[in-house]
Length: 406
Image 1 (cartoon, rainbow, N blue to C red):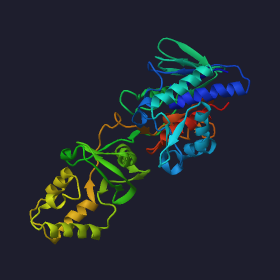
Image 2 (cartoon, rainbow, N blue to C red):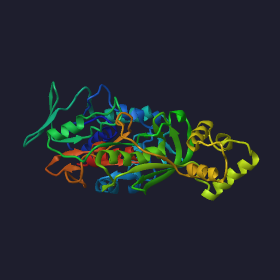
Image 3 (cartoon, rainbow, N blue to C red):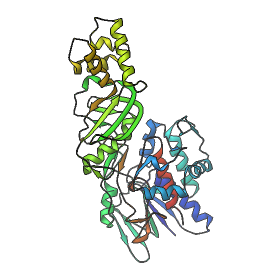
Image 4 (cartoon, helix red, strand yellow):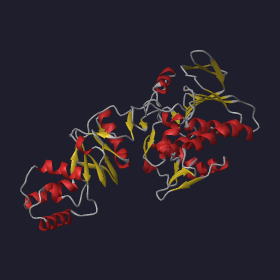
């Protein structure tokens, strides 16, 4: 029983190791081969977690995932945190978790994870073929034929783990082109876990970081709210809490909808002082005015905000007169600073791509194609994407394990 795995990323390598192990356990003869289009496998894995590789999360919950939840629910009902942790433990990879449940290799280096996976591939006889771009899969009664420009490889079954187009230089559209060749449909694609460009001119805030609350609103309804560090870029907003709302902006610009519901307007609202109520912010500002009665808006905020941010807000207020009305306007901005997201090409910087193969095409219990059980799918090619914090890699490992079941 020969198994070919298209894609040498996280889910592909994990699936290869587990498939080779399962063949041994069942006493079956067969070969497991990973086909990778690049010169090296695991390139995107090396870039995760800023090179530290946040490889899973202790607190896997369906609330942290989006897309076709039927798939995520089925995958994690079979392989959740304990199974993923046990997999890496069996390979000798030592890990540690932070206070938020994010699990990293003990070395704090992504290359440790990749080296461990490659060592396991060698141990279990997994062959890795690089510079192999799959152009098509021909289905025959007794075999599947995987075709590249220069050669053909036959297999009993194929696992498609070729990732997504996210991240310039690491992602690709080839997986989606392959889906078209073999007649598999997929849901609309859009970037997720990325910065959000805004229409306002905030170039003067580039480099500013502030802790606060970010809210994403659609037609004035709050869709998502999250606390964290907000980073200002020359054209928009960034930071983990912004990454976690970027999916909604991507969906709106791609489909004109949020969570499947049509909407007309979206905006982002920042609370720069979430620890305080509106009335408390007013009291703080009044105390500042009392201490410095001749201070302008920027000076009034000197002991509260970064100088660039104080200057930006002062320009928005655009008055030299500090009265009760000005204090209220300042408090409004500090608690509800509005930004309007605009469409931009975020695929180059996105960590993941939302959308992909859905449960309409596959059996969620096996991840096999309904029309041909010999073809399975795992990882980001599926219509499942997670929040920041190791959730996407958790799904990559878990879905790879499920695909490897024989």
